[in-house]
Length: 447
Image (cartoon, rainbow, N blue to C red; front, side):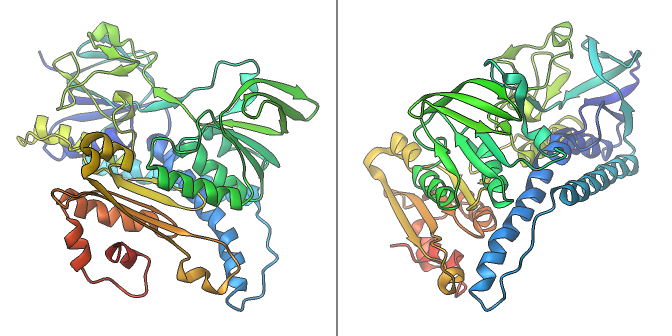
């Protein structure tokens, strides 16, 4: 049978773009289907707008620090509308860049919503398209909690497009997305109340890191309500009353409620059952080569719900293309994938937390930790601490995890991720010579 394409990709996000461009480089006929702007969640409503907003929020800290170094304290105010407009221009530019890359690679872009007819055929806006191989890269979508008044809740995608900056925003959830958005909004000048069910924020991270971030957020003025859930949301005039239960069972009045805790694979409407594709807990089941239960159909990115990071989706997409079209079978290694919380203060981590390591190795785990005032704040009155921590297997001396809270955490941990993946030991850290004065060198002096 002659197919319209050798490869048809559903979804022009990071995973789909990486796979289609790599596959086209091997000389195969490739098309990519997208109903929204090219770039996916990361570019349009995720990583990029979040990071741009985080940059905007950091200037609040910069202006406060500057006074300690002899600069007159500036009397600047944040202009929400100006930022939103600038952010939209940059997102549009990035989307166009991806469009251009597809064209240069020889990948055909097809606009519309895709639905499976069978394992080799899709319906896209009334057009039937066939392909030898199909890659699903549709990402994930925001969901809202099932509570009375949930229609008044906004998601992170909606936050980036609000016409007016919230005066008092309630952020529901304690994982890395709500935490970074709470910190950003606080630094931009909104009053922030964060509400979550757990004992402390970032429960999936190393506890030392989580508590250091929470302490920093509290010092910045964020109201933290732990062991608390939202039972109901009621509109009262221009405000919203949150009826709470748990440790802080009272009423909190705000003008905006943000829920950024949960995302689910964006697969509704694909009619996957017509192609014989199996799901597990709402995600597409794939093997180590990202093949679904249908031999010619594959899936990458958030819709398979493994590690839902943009670089992981890109790696999966490229590995798929190399395996299927480049005569280079390979899989993605999920060990030592670094992650960040663009919180205020900033945090990043790679490898095992102390708790994870002790669960595997027990008493063989040794931790090295330091919390100190960074040199930057030696001339300011900011009570700001940096935390660094290494988790080590004392039997092999191998470093199993590295965790940091403070300025530069993302860039430093990104580099340490390479060392950990290569099997760096504590002795390697001890014998290395650092750059002085720097925060990164403190990882080499832990005793």
